[in-house]
Image 1 (cartoon, rainbow, N blue to C red):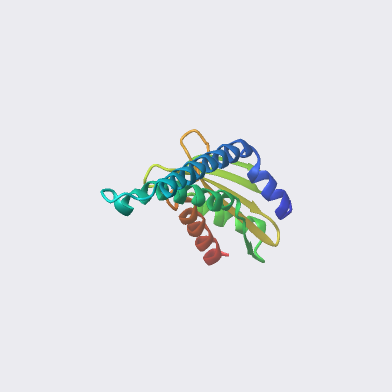
Image 2 (image 1 turned 135 degrees about the vertical axis):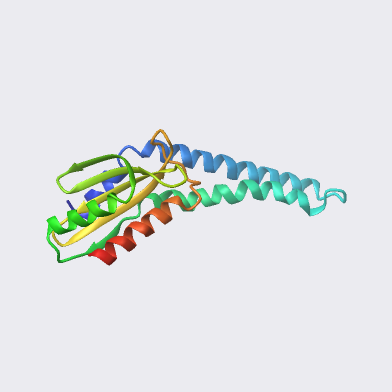
Length: 170
């Protein structure tokens, strides 16, 4: 399986979630812009002062963050390794044994795993073991398997932990 096929496989089934997340981001950014325009049009009054600008910022910041964050769920990290497929599989198994794995599936070197972290959040790991490399991807999911964009760094920490372990072991 090539890297582009791996990316297609990890994106499969997420288009609906991505579409809803983008629609949500557009809605809250639009609300923030309309609110900002109304403040600009009416002017800032003395009793409220500039504190009233906090409200549109509370809409604009998460909306813009969502546009930046949504594609990051599909980042793929490549680790090149000369080790045999069996050794790579043993390293992946040893990593997965340190997690609270709920489900795990394997299909011709493509491993998907869902685990629960210490704070009861769920993470989906996708790992492809190839002869010359290992492809890794992680993303946070909700309890039903849906994908949100405000995960408070869960996806970043999960992928960093996985990469660090795999780079040290391979």
